[in-house]
Length: 140
Image 1 (cartoon, rainbow, N blue to C red):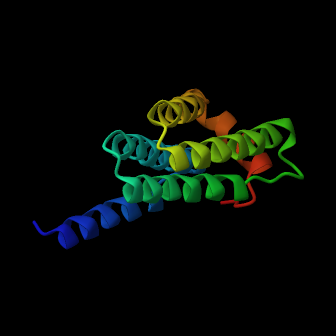
Image 2 (tube, one colour; image 1 turned 30 degrees about the horizontal axis):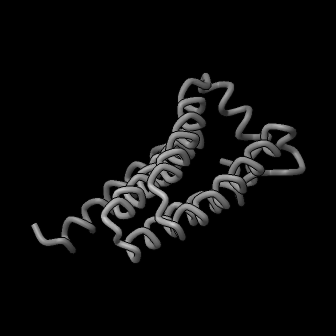
C-alpha cells in the first residue's frame, strides 16, 4: 500500500470515529493524538532529528491549543480554569523541550498528559455529558 493510500485510509478511519463519538471520546482522541506526537518528538530527539522533533512538537502544540480553545471559561468553573492553565504549562514545557531536544522532558510531558487522559477515561458518561455542557464552547 502506498504512503498516500495509507494516509487516506487513516484519515477516513479517523473521520468515521469522529462522526460517531461523543465529546468525551473526542477529547480522549485529541489527547491520544497529542501524546503520540510528543512521544514521536522524544524518539526523534533521541536520534537528534531536529526537523522531525520540531514537526512533532508543532503537531502536539496544535492539538493542545485546540483543546484549550474549546474550553468555556465563563461557565466551566475551576475545572476549565485548571485545564486551561495545565494546557498552557504543558505547551511552554514542550516548546522548551523541543528546542533543546530534551528527551526526558518530552517524556515527562507525555506522562502528564497521559494522566489527564486517564482521568477523562474513568469519568462516568453521564457526568462527562454534564461537564461537557458546562466546560466546552462546542455543544451537541
